[in-house]
Image (tube, rainbow, N blue to C red):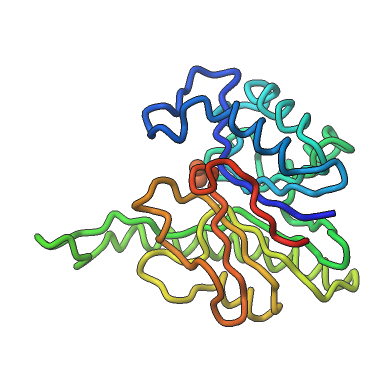
Length: 246
Ligand SMILES: [Fe+2]
Ligand SMILES: [Fe+2]
């Protein structure tokens, strides 16, 4: 039995959104996903998909993408990504009712893996715009956008805090924390997300959203303050699910 994670499948079985222009790694990426998930994940395993599942804007336009995920081996847990327009945060319970026994939508709730509580939310990071000098160094940024980002971080933190509390009340002491956005932006060493990870002594923080060689290093990877940080974007992993726990 193992816990795996993979993010950013960016499926488009019902829309003509091709990912090919983003580089070779994205060519026929649905076939790669299918192949590697089936090679790695066993029926007794759990796979957490860390958001940006589908390009469809409405649930009706995502049915085939979700059915593709449903057919993967093991238990599937989904997190909201910034592109998952089909998933209204207020309607998570409705999605969980509709997909009961097939997919679990992680938001304002928690899932259990062995003696771990799996908690997660989309998260948020300020991604600019930044102003650069002629050597490409960041010398300023859009303060209005930064302020907006601060509010979104607060909202996401409230959701995360509620999930941690629910898990703790249910008696869980060990946690894995999932985010779609990276836990810190490129200006930060720490953030409310790294602080809550510390507060709950989480074993690992798993996130995705960063695409392309130049963005993979945007946030923390590896051990930091006793927490393991894992980037699991599909293109970063060449669509091989990463093992979070044995
Ligand atoms: Fe993405
Ligand atoms: Fe994303």
